[in-house]
Length: 550
Image 1 (tube, rainbow, N blue to C red):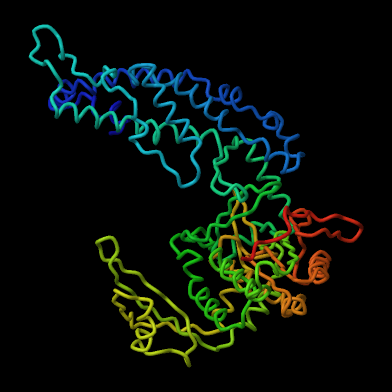
Image 2: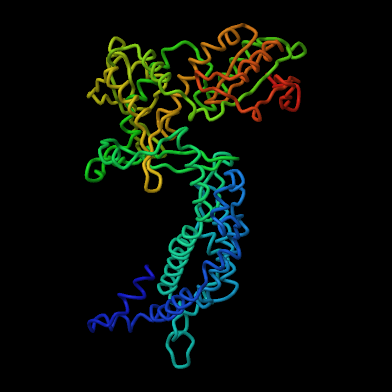
């Protein structure tokens, strides 16, 4: 039920049928009066004054001074959950008539649910059953039949059908409170976002403050990572572009480019909408890079947390073996983090690495589907894969290979195969890396350094790039029997039985490697033994003597 329709169409006096409907529906007549009161209260409510009172931010009062502050300081001015909750509660009490809730107790029930809603983490939800827990429908007089209990009336109790209708309307009213009132209120007052350091925790920034923060962030990356495109270049450019959003970090912002949505194209005279998303266009290139990675020799790079666990097991077997617990060797560990790893990658070096990585002149993309039972239903999944033409198996050979891992499933050959040449794939990756155009506000920017974050290719490109750096700079340490390296994205973990090798690894990584754009975050460097960098700078030492490798 839409409350806009309650205020308009339902009550318009057009035909006699409309009059009869309005006259017969006493619930709508009761609600109409309350909605009219709410609209008056809404016009009188001082939203901006209440926002300033409950969620004050000094920098917004003087945007010129705010722009002079650094981003790290501005990010600390986030509105707390308590401030946002107090603001919302004040608005609800001033705008929504108490009669809509029926009583102060019922209003307290709804406000409690709104408090929980504001504190939700990303992807969490509030069940409607929770919202209505403790809500007394009998106190909502606008839902009650006015003839109920009156002297001379034949209506003595609420019939089951009428009771069901009351609950249905109440649920729709409460749904509107959250979807049609609370969410637009929060969106109008705050920029709501997650962050890169608090996982799925949600942060509320006043819009004025967020404009200052993002303006400072754009100014900081303009010229170093992005260049602003002039209007003439935009008018003649025939490229797709993406929109960028900024994700708060501890002391900075991370630009995240949305490459999963359909991409508009910059064309002369306007924008043509409806192209495939960039990630869809890059999917075959992703499959080919995954295939080439599977053909390479063992790499220290882990594909995810589960792969990280498997690699640590391999490290244990290599460095500890079957040694008894009483004779476990002392292990020296160094953990380093690359500073702005995605943003500092040299594009020319990366493209040269990718060109050398693709060994075949042509690749075949073949697809099969798998039909299997799942929770009493049939589930169908599609599995695309890239392979060299010389290794292309027949479907029967492929099915035999899948027999052990695809039990209780039917494999279906999709028959149609796609051929991709190396030349086309390299050009596609080159355009993606060097012609990455983003729009922020009303302006367009072209990325000149690093690779787009948010791309399906970004993790693979990052792995190939740092594989090359590892081979050129660290191979004398990682290929020995007494040391091992495990890497997850831009985090390096070096483990050795020798303290001098662990110290050497730290020294090499600390000195930086400009040819790879590789510089570590000193404040994120951790060891499990006492060591100092050049100049006597101490490195943070973790608690305990090391990792339990049992």
